[in-house]
Image (cartoon, rainbow, N blue to C red; front, side, top):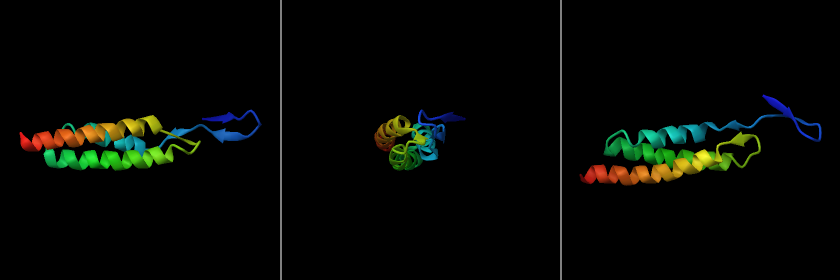
Length: 87
């Protein structure tokens, strides 16, 4: 989908970045697996979330809030994986 900028420039509508979507998927999946794989997915969510957050500074990319939520969920996933490891 495209839109016309008030100055007459033709730009594409911003789209979600792939890292932000993958970060959210990894963060959610980290809660459904055991300690080892859950920890790995949580770390992947944090890394991909950081990449997605940096990419969202571009005006053609969306997903900053999604990436930030994924980073927080990844941190909670690490805590959950540590609790699964202990219990």
